[in-house]
Amino acid sequence: MSYQRSSALFVEAQNVIPGGVNSPVRAFKAVGGTPIFVKRAKGAYLYDEDGNQLIDYINSWGPMILGHANAKVIEAITERAKQGTSFGMPTELETQIAKLAISMVPNIDKIRFVNSGTEACMSAIRLARGFTKRDKIVKFAGCYHGHSDSFLIQAGSGASTFGTPNSPGVTQGTAKDTLLANYNDIESVRALFEANPNEIAAIIIEPVAGNMGCVPPKEGFLESLREVCLANGTLLIFDEVMTGFRLAKGGAQELFSIKADIVCFGKVIGGGLPVGAFAARNEIMNHLAPLGPVYQAGTLSGNPLAMAAGLAMLTEINNDNELFTRLEQKTAYLEKGIREVLNQNNIVFTINRVGSMISVHFDEEAVVDFQSAKKGDNDTFKKFFHGLLNEGIYIAPSAYETWFITDALSYEDIDFTIKAINKVAKTL
Ligand SMILES: *Cc1c(COP(=O)(O)O)cnc(C)c1O
Image 1 (tube, rainbow, N blue to C red):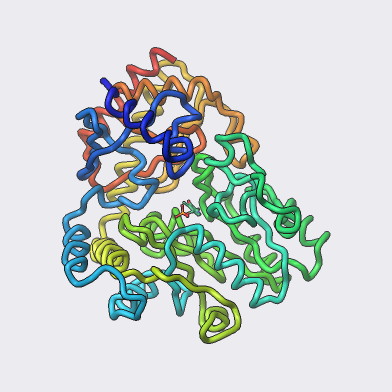
Image 2 (spheres, rainbow, N blue to C red; image 1 turned 180 degrees about the vertical axis):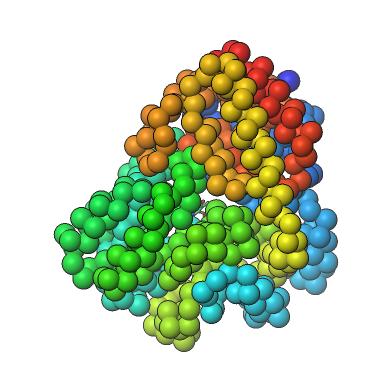
């Protein structure tokens, strides 16, 4: 496949945009080569500027769970756009999507919409701090909660890809209030609580980690976090920006039957437009301005185009009782196929999967936390990535990323992918 036009566009972009991209991992630094400039996408496929068709296993990093350019979502956006694109005033749409989200997700009474997952997580910890009147938070190495200062401490994927887990520009003052624990290691959490009694406002966690590859919580781990939080007057924040409306209608809370105190959303909830949200029970949400003292605002928050896209997306998901079963079956089929061909070719690997989130690691040890995720063989991954790209298959350009399966993906697409992986495996 030729990527001439993408290469030329990348050169041009680099003159005017830092690194030529508006989000670092897009620059292909971890895998080398030139990023692909996309022209359009439909269903399971991307079409790039050189006229190549690619099967998409990233799907905008999660949002396109129903495939690209879903007819219902596109119609909702188009119709809404004709009536004006922003007012900075309330619209009925916001109440409609809020009601729907609250009906789908367990344990939340109110929801506030923002413009990204970053904003959602940033606001959630401010709310937790305001509510508990404490300063410190616990996060897990390898978990990503967006790029706000408090979270840029061993933040997984993007940050790790670039070897700057602690970004310059984050002050010592901010960093000292972020305590770091190890994923799937409850003792590391208990130790922080012992060392910081009555100081921890919240634990924030990706209930299934998705930014160091896909790392499922060990049996009992989330339950233990829930207990530790209850025992210490600390709030449990589930960052479901990735898992929300992807692992189940009610996200990880539903899948694992665990109640979080605050839940963050992004990605799927916006139907492909920039949307984030955070939600909790009344007792907590009523602390938020204008009801309470914790300030949070946004000129474009609840934007009508974004809300229309999100509402159409959530409506489709809510009305389809087979969706998550289909996604589970397709992804299980893909997993089985990859295992078979990698085994046949004597490749050392580990695959992690929860529902439609899956990751392939070139290491035989189980990947259970950031430490083990980092052990994967990056050179093998690079060859794997470029090999697949050459076969017309687009996976994330970093070994630390999860693949997101879309409902638009057919079994023929998956068979094609497995064959391609078999071919590429022979070159690893
Ligand atoms: C993507 C992601 C974010 C950040 O969302 P943005 O919309 O990129 O700001 C936060 N948390 C998790 C778990 C994510 O996967």
